[in-house]
Structures are given as structure tokens and as C-alpha cells.
Length: 406
Image (tube, rainbow, N blue to C red; front, side):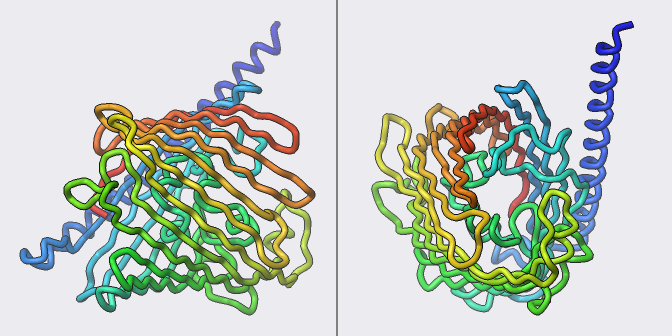
């Protein structure tokens, strides 16, 4: 009897069963969210015909991605479903809700530090990521209190969003040195946005010191036991005529010129949660870790190349204080937009991060985002990852669906 053959068959069947269970959890979450949104939408009506602004705004985004470690032959399937709704409850005020579900066949197939896929996360059927009240105090000032992810407001320029690698968005010295509320976690906080003119945005947020994706740990604001984190940025987006189309929006193929300077600072108390994680070294309870990071990013349109527009994206940052997991990072990329009659963006970038113990990782990514329909896109990507002298080659194939009016 060929035991190896039967063992391989058994492993294959187990993987298939796990895939079905993952899909089942995702479908249950999707159904729950859709029913909730439908109930809200039925109850709500537009405020008035004059404004044309719907009382209920919503979105549903789904991403499914095949992953392949070309060097080892290992493969994985990762899925992410997110949804949100915003309901007007009084003049200028809104109740906001957001949640996501994630599922994958395996924990990971590439031994990298920066994470070559920005949707990788532990499988979970439901995570609450956004719940609170927002208030437009004036045309220039907006305030929000409640549960929120930091990457809703930071690390999310158009240039960064093209790439599948995680570090093009949230820089490692911010996301890894502090338990910051970035995907898939969130933290309770207060967000303030001020727009003195059409081209300037000043944002700042104060969060509870420890973010989480667990309901029993999310709704807490305990600086004495968890710490406190403040993150903020100043963004400048000038309207440069040669990069604009007829409607004042960026011309086909060009990114909107955007220049961002940001910071994160705070302290955290590491204790039982970290010490109980088998993947991390035990840390004495109530050990305080202080510090922060500075970062900057640039989205810069450059020139017209036939029908296409050539753009530059760059970002980088440094750590401040005692934080030592990630010490610094930079990334640079060229993006060619509107490369086909239907659009599409071809991008090539390099992202390098420096870590403790003199570890360094460099990820070369080439990707092409193709809009199949207005709400559907297909995106292959290739990564060549160099980590501490070792090389991995990985590929992604991502299918994204985006629906809604939010």
C-alpha cells in the first residue's frame, strides 16, 4: 500500500474541507451584514430633494486573492470582505458602522517581515472595525468619536493603494513598533479633521494605547493600563492645471498631486497579552514602551507618455524613542496610469525596511491593476523579497469588488 499517496490525498481533503468552512464563515458574515444594511436602508429616507445627499451611505468591498510562493511551490487562498454604513441622524451628524471578515487556507506561505499581501490576516468571521458618531461642525471642521482604524485616515494615498505589499501604506516603524489600530484591528479614539482651504488637510487622532480585534477589548480607553497613542498628518494637494481634466479632477492616467507629513507618538504597557502569545518572548507585566515615528509620502504626476500618465510615489520614515522592532523604512515606485483603452495602472516599486538585530528586508514589486468593470478589478503582482540574505519569489492574483455610495 502506498501510504505516501494516501497521506497526500488526506491532506488535500483536509485543505478542501478547511476551504469550505472558510467560505461558509465568510458567506454567513456577508449575509448578516447585508441584512443589517437592508434593514437600515428600508427605515431611512433621503433628507431632502434639494441637497441630493442620501441619508444612508454604504459600501461593500470583497477581495479574493490567490498566492503562490514560486520558490517553494506552496500556495494559499486569502479572502477579505468589508462593509460599512453611515446614517444621518441629525444636521451634520451621522452614526457610522464598519466591519470585516477574513479567511485563508494557511497562516502564510512566505517567511517575510513586511508582508507581501496587505489583506493577510488571521481567519475570523467577524471583526468590528468602525462604530461611532461623526459630526460636521462646519465646512472646515469634522470630529468623530468611537471605534476606528487608523488606515481609514492615514497611509492611504492613491499611489500607496495600488500596491499589494503592506509597507507601501502603513510604514513599519509606525505599524509594528506600536499596537496601532490598522487592518485588521481598531481602537477607541477621537478623530479631528480640519480643512482650512481646499488643498490643505490637517488630521489628528488620539487612541487608546492598545488596539484589538476582540469585542471585549475594543471599547476601552485606559491610558493608565494600555497607554495612549496620538497620530496626525498634514496633507497638501494642489490643483496643478497641467495634470487636471475638464472637470477639475486628475486627468486620465495621473495621480492627484499629494504631499503628506505625518507622525505617531505615544506609550504602551506590555503585559499579559504579549507574554501569553507563544510567538513572542514573555514581557514582564506593566513594562512601559515609549516613542513614535515620523513619515512622509509623495504622489507626484510627472509626464504624459502617449495615452498614459507617468507618476512617482515615494514614502519613508524613521523611528523615535525606545521603539525597536522596526527602525526605518523607505519605498519608491513609478506608476504608469491609463495604459489600455479601458484604463489600468502598471506599477513597479521597491520597499526596504530595517529592523532590530540589523535585519533588513527589500521587496521588489511589479503589479498591474486592470479595471474589468467599474466595480470589478483584476490585479496580478510579482514580489522578489530579499530578507537577511535569503530570497523569496512570490506571486499574487487579486480579484476585487467594490459596491456602494460611500
